[in-house]
Image (tube, rainbow, N blue to C red):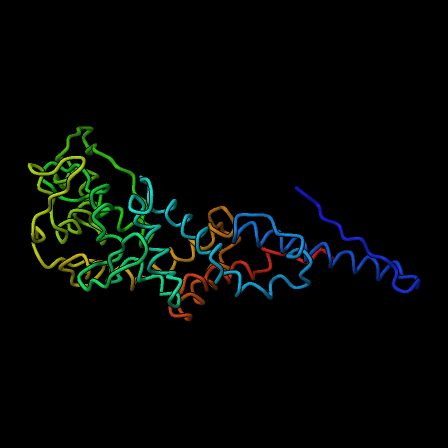
Length: 318
């Protein structure tokens, strides 16, 4: 850890009391350390000499999260957090692309976090085009190709899981073992197996979600090409989290209304700011974030600001 100290010189030859010196030194160290931490977290770099001299660095937070340095760093973080199989360049990282060119487009105000998953847009190298049928980066062809999965009949079980994971933070462990100890690729369809519950009997049932997403044509698709059926395989509609779902768009909009969606937004923000998952001691601070996120209209920067402005980010040392 680097400790930064500021030299304090007597003004006009007058002596400064020990208590005043200690208070001044303590404040200077605190502001410098706070500025250093803010620049490290939000920009991924050390604060400059001029930035270290800002007496109240927290007062500059609004400007910092509008800066392109923050947008770039946070976009890379979200891509790493959600895109488990990153590619090369912008086109190989649709999550990053959607963050930089749609959610935080430099020529437009920040869009609500929900729009990353439900927004009607398609990205290209330097921007985006409106596309009312699209559902965020989940509609991106490169993303669909990477996460199409390998279910033999073309059902996009992995796609379904990645949507749930990215949007509401669902984490599951894959199993192919039934209660009797047997296993097989069709075990998920057997009500006697532990697999059946997650695939058919829960709110997040993967097979029922895959039923509203067009299947992969296994005969025509390969590692480089994705050929999909023209319509979801059904049966339609499906009841997902208490809502009627008929396609990808209605699925992502349903997920965006859940408490889990708001919780996951704050989880993403918390881990970005603190570099770790939230713990029991963070419960009150975390719940305050959820409330603030909802009250803001669902802007992810409100969640980030909440944690940066919290007492545990820059504590007074004076």
